Image (cartoon, rainbow, N blue to C red):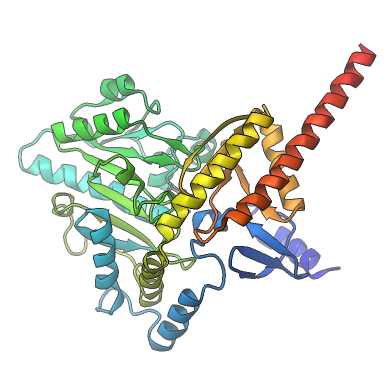
Length: 417
Ligand SMILES: *Cc1c(COP(=O)(O)O)cnc(C)c1O
């Protein structure tokens, strides 16, 4: 039995069967490549689902971990350490928001944002305003797996097995301004959006829809909450994807790339929203620990010193341009969209989506398919044009083979018919 086979057998017996893993054992990584047990290099266009912004074995991350691990890894939030205020300053300066709460993961940050919205509405009620407790979320949304998060996540298969979920959530059709207006009232304490939906298929809000959500919230004091867990922190070429719209939410959440692979999430909010939270109302044991904060500070400094936001825009534009050229050649690619290094190519069937992911993996390139038909690319920000060329050449080969195969099958069918 190989080492991989041993691990597979043990996991099959010992773990909850939540994942359908690919049978590859990765042992290290370097730059934009992951390396398996045989030394085979894989080009990573997924970065651990949008996490490894600086790729693998980045010296800035190695240095931050090594230095901080010798000093302090954890102390709890009962005491001060050097990392939180400096990281909060970096985040508030870049987001346009005022205050920060550190959590560990995306879903935990989102959960806290939902609690903040409920507490804020309660504060407004205590001041004599009429405002309810309902949330408006969007179709195709994804906000995480804990109860509040999954209750505001649209896909039924994530919610229904765990019902009853948190009540008081209504879903609005994506980019349907009329539907948003019809469902909004002073019963609503927050409108929940991803400015560019990730899991839902790299779908951006329209300017009109996002602006209307802002206007409606302003009319009652409800909070506009933007989930930037996937799109935020430079992936789209701006620190926050709402900055492409010139619209400031009241609350935003970040996580995935924040500490370059060490778990860390954060809620960012305005002074107004922050009024609702007092000592003891919300907390975490691990969130915002010294190690995670030290690494996050190093990640943000490196994104800046290495000009990686501009780089993400440049290489991302190139990627989309190449995918568009591919779409002209292969009609099974029905759409190409995205911003910066959050890129999607939609194909015309779920079978094809699955097949392309598997064929790319055979060619040692890691991509993902979300929402059945959307090939999703979330590479490390350090990706270069040459890596894009490699990926495009493989995609071209796969789509060409697929078309040849389909033509042969249809000819066979014609002969039979
Ligand atoms: C990944 C993701 C989450 C959940 O983050 P976890 O760290 O997996 O809990 C929430 N919202 C969005 C937009 C995400 O992409």
